[in-house]
Image (cartoon, rainbow, N blue to C red; front, side, top):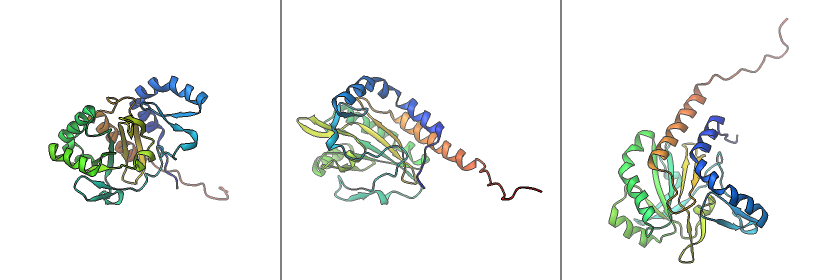
Length: 229
């Protein structure tokens, strides 16, 4: 059965991402006229003929297997059962805004475990560059290398020629629930446009509350055939 997002969660997600919609409404109108696809990001993603099928809210998260900075491969199936996975897509280790974000997440990392959530950061950086980056800062979560932008494209986060003529990822946050369903996605409009740690934690808390409420809600029994006498 296809997963669905509760109406209340939809409003919550709209609230969190309102700043993106406000900034991109004009660009979205222009995109329809010019044949380009725009997301809440730094510009046009690609021409229509080159668009990759992008995972949307409520859909199953794609499986992945990416090499981490320590040379080991992390697969989506490695995530502990019953836990959320928060994917942090960042532009690269050279990006000051990305450094600040990842260092903040390092400081706040202990706040995620009580919510049964873990983190993984993804960029186009090579394994060697990621290893040097991690050697400097010792992050408590894996830095994954996606040089072919396969996972980045799956979430519509590619920024064509975003740095020195090279395609990179836009700053993006994706929250995947324990059932492997995408429950939250935010694609930044600029290098500094990204959810704060508190917003990410709040999003997880709200999703957990909504799921708990949905499980506790009584289900209506089907009417008995034939009716009463």
